[in-house]
Amino acid sequence: FVGITLVWFAVIMKTALRTETKFKLKGLCSTYIENESNKVLERLISIEEYKNSHGLSVYLSMNGEVNTLPIISHAFSCSKRVAIPKILGKKSEDMFMLELCDATQITTFPKNNWGIAEPPMDLINQSQDCTYLGIIDLILVPGCAFDSSCGRLGHGKGYYDCFIERVFHSNAQLGKPLPTLIGLSLDEQIMSDDVTIPMELHDRYMDYIVTPSRLISRTHT
Image (cartoon, rainbow, N blue to C red):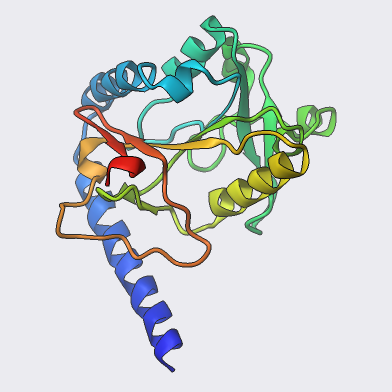
């Protein structure tokens, strides 16, 4: 009974935090988000794990999120390999990681219902899922909100929770290092210090959270 109560409390609190954060983000203009995203890029590329990475998983941003297109361009300029997600279905495991040829390839992709560019299915059918190739050593993780302990609140679909578990397991099986997890966040998405995101068994803490104004490190919390 106690376990069930805690689970329901976590679900209710997560729902409330998502509603609160989405309300704050709704009032931000695109120019502001672009400027803040550039600050996130500058802070991200100073992290040693990013500098030393060879293969990145990078989400394609939707409205109200840090713009990742400049990050993808920077990664290619540093000769890094870049993989982006494609949602194939409604199950949490239905996310495919496609390796991009170059940054401009994204401009040829159609947009989904959330306004996010996604690779077409014919390209997916011709490609290997990078989740299982052992090439990803850094994952840039989207989120609805984050806290000062590097806790992450996702959008509730579980795609990234499942992907992270799968790539960790695959890398371990292949003898590859486990990827560094970096959450990208606007300052408005960071909870105040007195609010902690409830973390369930399937939730992973980020190694770092990068915002326009600061770098939050799990090892220092």
